[in-house]
Image 1 (cartoon, rainbow, N blue to C red):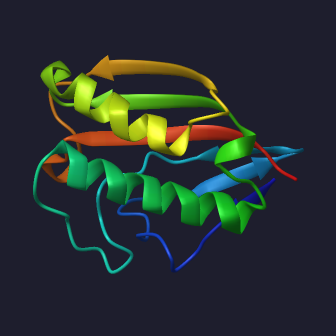
Image 2: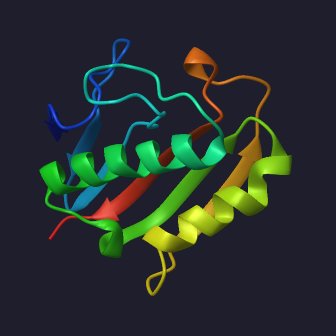
Length: 124
């Protein structure tokens, strides 16, 4: 097992890593809309989702993976009324390649984020 850490995504805000690689699979920790400097992105679901995908891109690259190698995504959303807007942005990052996905509404996310996403990806 190898842990992943990059300064291009926010540091873990607890006792966990940004992700781990086991064999040829990368498991990311959930990414919320924090900048790499640890500043929360304000605004609506659109602004927050784009930051989450920026963070996912950074940890995937550090792991030797990419959006094209993601096999499963889990989306946690604070308000299911934002699902259509989130889905539209999600489709920008997964346009041709469509991994398996779960999406659940949750009562609250860390730092009161509107969205958190974790992925499992094949490492090149």
